[in-house]
Length: 104
Image (cartoon, rainbow, N blue to C red; front, side):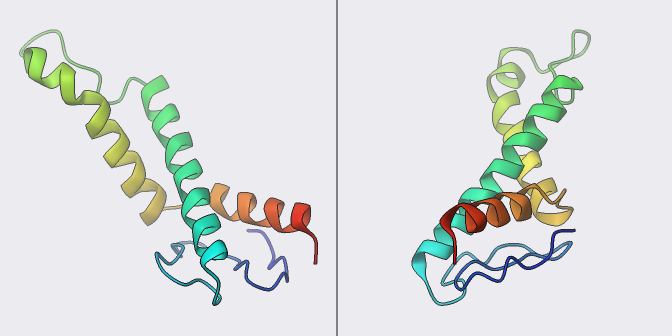
């Protein structure tokens, strides 16, 4: 778990805490950063699930073209839920990194 970067307007997240969807620490920019950081984490989770073969269309008794067409959508939605409910800390690391880059 990363420590609070102590930069005004950039919140630190604790395990299981999701960035607020509106006005984080009083600034719209911080809210945008938090949402983007959560999206990065969800993208990482989606890539890992995809590499593991999760939700790949099945050959036998599969859903056919319909299942294949929506497999990516299902993968991204599940990854977003996983990132929100059991964060890996990637969003927090992105926020801390941006806070260091931006400076005090």
